[in-house]
Length: 452
Ligand code: FES
Ligand SMILES: [Fe+2]
Image 1 (tube, helix red, strand yellow):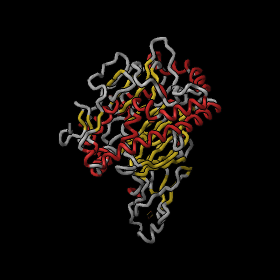
Image 2: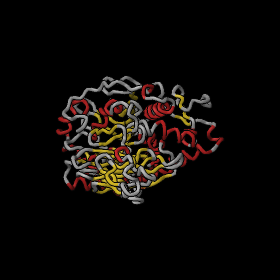
Image 3: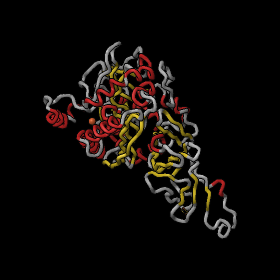
Image 4: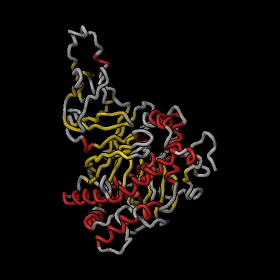
């Protein structure tokens, strides 16, 4: 059944027009309507730990310099010289008080990009250049959640706290479970011929693919470990149809995870024995920080709308940088807990790289599928037949504890429906006033706060 004309996302029947992955006009519209308005995850405090540290990042296709100034305050500025538009910072990261443009030497400060020096200011410009107003373009808003730095170009965007809303209840259970939070290593960067939404959709909570897509890698891994073929691998894998795992959508963000029964031990998705022991060892601290209810939730995977994702079992966090309808620059970080012992950090990094990352056994399975799915959108014939996101439609529930739109079962497409519904809301509205935000209802019983 074709999708109604002009309606790309059909939430009644769970259908998606394939041209959302292939149409250049849609792509341009995404850059304008989503990437200049949404709160985007651009970095982490651990990437700029010291005064005058900087980190080169992106907001959509726009290069951005993230800095920590001499007083410890964070800033994010468009990496574009106000003279001819040259990139002011070329390094991935470093430490500098000022940034000098390599073309004609205009120089900007790290504390918000003030224009502090212009060659020939008196001699060539006759002292008439409006230096005051020619600093680097700063983002409209910047804020942090549990050490993660977010920014938006839109002064009208709601607060980051409202934007994340009840999604925090879920992400806290990894990002905020220990004192000191996470520190990020990386990123590894690579480009894949797929649309940015395809990996964001997969990480939203597509557990359905795991036992098929990753079958051969799981078998190979089990053989090396001397386990029976097909034993659960370290991919966040759960039985494909487990009903105590849930898919959740909140404000277009989504996650999938397991809710333990009262008194039941948290599930262990890592098959590395050192990391399993580590997880058991931090249970008391987690209970203190998260409280008795929230601590029962163990996330597997999730996406913060639009293009940031995480996978706890492999300790990876991602930014899917859009680079055209058929191109995505993947930024993959390994996330380790700051308070963990060095041996745990090392084991975490190793386990993560073996599974996910450019040469990770499991990563490659995923990339190949994403590329081919998006390629189908190029075909006019294929586009006449919509993509399906209808699994479990109508079976969403109001859960007595877990906030948001919840659906029981490790395999469902409530997470994709949440993601594409949000996509359409951004694409079809011109102001934040028209984008609905779910009220915050989650209860926080532990000591963890929004910022740390
Ligand atoms: S382009 Fe930067 S100083 Fe001219
Ligand atoms: Fe996968």
